[in-house]
Image 1 (cartoon, one colour):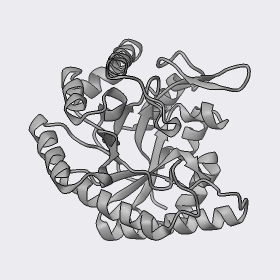
Image 2 (cartoon, one colour):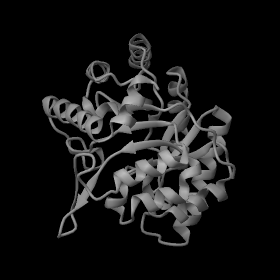
Image 3 (cartoon, one colour):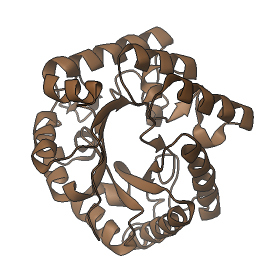
Image 4 (cartoon, one colour):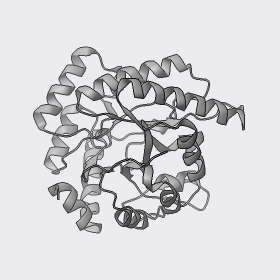
Length: 292
């Protein structure tokens, strides 16, 4: 289980957190001076769900804007699946997503590790890891790398599980995506999780959140929550992380809850979030935006 090589540092953002349509996603990121666009959905559809004309238009428009696509987010192993989802369907999603990502100059795909369907441990672990091995072997064949996010699924529950997954799958085509805010939702300290898995982190989501007295979790402005965002950023810099940081406010658009705001609310909240990041961490964001 060797640690991956680092990539150049940049700031990007998840497009559908800013806008629903491709044109608006591109416009907003261009106007904010962000050099990258992490693609999740376009006009409400995952990248693998687009028809060929829509895919051709996506590739042409992104190239025309000169934006990098560091990661394509897929639903593989995520909140819309369980360990009972047909594996053949998942492999097909991976194949289509990989082909379209590569056309966009991107070889990294976000995934998760399959929520339980009620079977419990240890059967959940066996099935989840079996699926992650199958996905990783297919990623090897396709020439893409899977980035497992600490969100939904078996390996997301702790740093120990994430490391066990990496060891059991044993593939250079499986690495980690660290979401700085997800620990608040899932009951662990984000910076502590990060410290354990740092050598395998290849992408970072910038998010913050707070848990209320009755247990409900709400996203907040960056640095205003209890995710330990500042500590995580310090850990990353100390470690020498120089990959992409991706803006994911989750204030207006929460796809796992089927909650989203109107176009104006999406854009205004996203713009405000980027400006709050620039104020709170000017060194990080200035280096990312300016490419230094």
